[in-house]
Image (cartoon, rainbow, N blue to C red; front, side):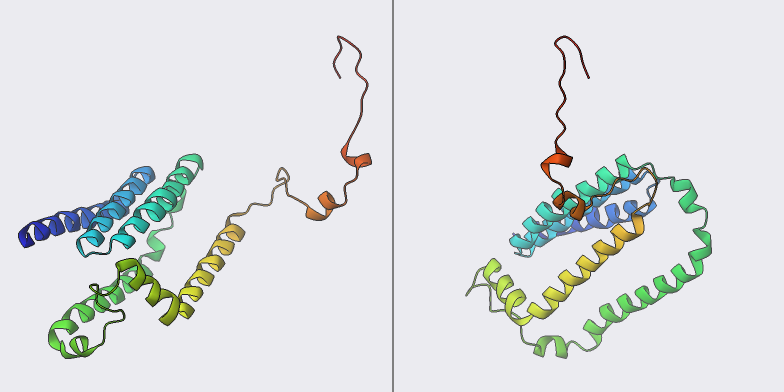
Length: 205
């Protein structure tokens, strides 16, 4: 059984890493979103192997069923000139290289630290009770909504601010743009909202 789990782990891990690389290097944005969906599905398989079935289902329902599909609709419906966006990409190459080097150094330190000094990770207490005592969903809810409730709410606030920022940055103020005016809607009365016309039989307006 352990060999079968290891086999599926390597299969899902290779699919996740390969599709994540194809997300970045794919020339077609629609193909990038499809590879992103494949990455989420492979990550859900890895969660199932570790016993976190709730996280796996949330990943499928939320990210694959909502976020990735929304990305796909946006990419397919918007007329985005990707060639114009890529023209000035080389000017950001030095900054991107520095950020990539920092991230690579953090990964190396994180991976090597577990082998150099494994004692702190062993001595650290688990954030949740053993899985034999409580279910996976109960343990996850206990951790999120008691011990880490402040960080959970801060993450929600950051996502809300990011959503407002994305709306403000992408909103185009043009003459043909139609806006909703709440005070004008509330101030309407039957005299301004309803127009009665008498139409003769067989004739239009």
